[in-house]
Amino acid sequence: MTTEIETRERLAPGPASSSVLWEYAPSLESTDHVKIASRYNLFIGGKFVEPHSKKWFPTLNPATEEHLSEIAEADAEDVDRAVKEARRAYDKVWRKISASERAKYIFRIARLIQEKSRALAVAETMNGGKPIKESRDVDIPLAAAHFFYYAGWADKLEYAFPNRNVAPVGVAGQIIPWNFPLLMAAWKIAPALAAGNTVVLKPAETTSITALMLADILQEADLPPGVVNILTGAGATGAALVSHDGVDKIAFTGSTDVGKRIQRALAGTEKKLTLELGGKAPNIVFEDAPIDQAVEGIINGIYFNQGHVCCAGSRLFVQESVAEPVIRKLRDRIGTLRVGNPLDKNTDVGAINSRAQLEKIQELVASGVEEGAEMFQSSCSLPARGYWFAPTFFTGVSQSSRISQEEIFGPVLSVLTFRTPEEALEKANNTPYGLSAGIWTEKGSRILKMASKLRAGVIWANTYNKFDPTSPFGGYKESGFGREGGRHGLGPYVVLS
Ligand code: NAI
Ligand code: MG
Image (cartoon, rainbow, N blue to C red):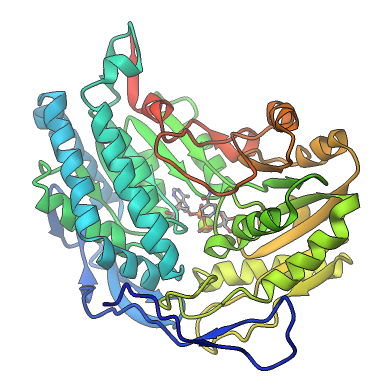
């Protein structure tokens, strides 16, 4: 049984200390049950069709740089085809069938994701570089949970918006990033379908495979052709979707740069827009916090998914009186993170998603060193091939430095200190972003007070990076606007009267 975790272990040589890294025998998830096609076409009108451009681009495994498949590149003609199919499906089928019938399809999609969860998890890890324990235990189960959750709303929209008439928006264009490929597809598609919209989805160019496996699932679920169309390609494909006249709504998750560009492109049009952009979240540790728990939370907040998380706790604020033990424990703990083959069930930190992202991380880390911050890096050995970055944190970071202002989107933490809660608040809010925050303290009243003054859409207390389909997610300021998840997540996909 491949799900069985190998527990044979031996003590690594070297002096015993709190930071001994136990070496485990490899426990690799098998890949032979996953069928990755040698080439993928576009999913338009319920069928896989060749791209008008007749162009395909390679996609690889970032942990090994091995070629995995070829992905079709959709051009403006393909976007036009897909939007027309989505419109036809909207007018002729999806808006006409009953809400409970819509729910039936969404429930089917949820169940099929569960049935195929093992293959989806392995494909997600192979194409994205994230550890199998995350794709298996976080990404794929949450993707299924989002479809289940919104399937339940489909025939209850009048309860979501009491005393209002609820109508769908129409055709939604959805553009998603590479950090949680299938999960972001689920976040976008599930509420859109539940509210009666049809969809043209564009996955990120480095991680298209699970979205195309989802296309197979949509066929198997008998979803009426055209209700969801999946167009692969890079920025130009996304831009063509944004500017297509037949699209009523754009939902985007990705960089603040592209988000701003999309906002400009849509200014003065009737199209609705939601943006979920970057973050530079403060994770605030008070002196009364349970320190060991907080250290685990800090680790999970920034090294989870290689820090490829828009809500990553990338700025640690620790109260001065406990800074020394917290930093010491952090240093010990990053030394015990297992970095390596993402298909190994023991791996904690996998591969960086792409060469471009690795270069961005390297450049920002170099700027931190140059600006005089002190760097601590795990001395783990990194695989020779693929894109890797060792878990890192900086102390002595100034608030104005690039590493405390700019989103690094990698396993890199900036540590700052504070004396009073007021100072913590002021420093935490000193950012153009406002997506999420963490608070660690025993005092309930302090949690509530801080939460009411932090300018962040999502706030965790004594935990970090917990997600649930019932809970709305979204930001303030340059982190974007609109909410995904929960009842709020239906809002962008309905017109109320
Ligand atoms: P990106 O914003 O370029 O890519 C996200 C998606 O937008 C992809 O599907 C991409 O093909 C598409 N896209 C790119 N240009 C477009 C355009 N002009 N019009 C429409 N769609 C377009 O993000 P990128 O370059 O991959 O990453 C850069 C940085 O963005 C990261 O280092 C990170 O800081 C941030 N980021 C934030 C994410 C989040 O979850 N909020 C996710 C991914 C990246
Ligand atoms: Mg980009």
